[in-house]
Image 1 (cartoon, one colour):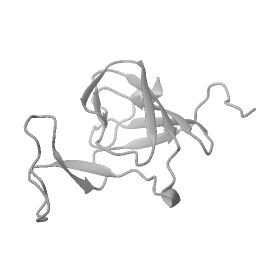
Image 2 (cartoon, helix red, strand yellow):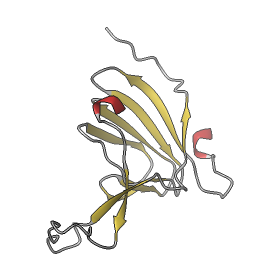
Image 3 (cartoon, one colour):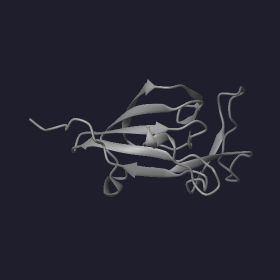
Length: 141
């Protein structure tokens, strides 16, 4: 499929997003990840996300960070959908090497299951390309 053959000028794979449907209650889309394609760490504020690997293989490093080891597609259903006016916009994060400098910060519990996050712009090597879904139409009743 052509969705898996796209790279930028630096040879970094581009991830293709196919928008299937959206209404006030939810949105549906498919992410097509080529090998080495990475979805960076991000949030879904005040939303619930159901994701299903349709085919391929992904290596999940944290709940929202996945590396594709082969051509892979992920179906995402978000409820409710992104809406900047309602405070539902995507924010990206870096894992910080140190705690925030605020005096009210609390130490993290021990173990590898915790990390400090800091907001950031989407990584320069993250390339998401929108494309047209050519499958059956989803219609409202």
